[in-house]
Length: 71
Image (cartoon, rainbow, N blue to C red; front, side):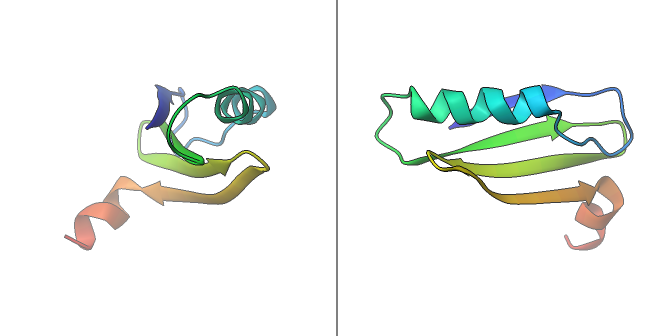
């Protein structure tokens, strides 16, 4: 559960609007979950956030080469 979108960056970083939007989404949610994920895809990597009602609790940026070397 959550949201994803793309950024025209190699390894994306969420904007202030991205962070506000995902926190607003979980705070207004009627889901049976107290957390959601946000994923932003870039050209050479991604950004993953775990968000709870109190805000972003975890963030990680990964390059695609890091993912393929661990598989």
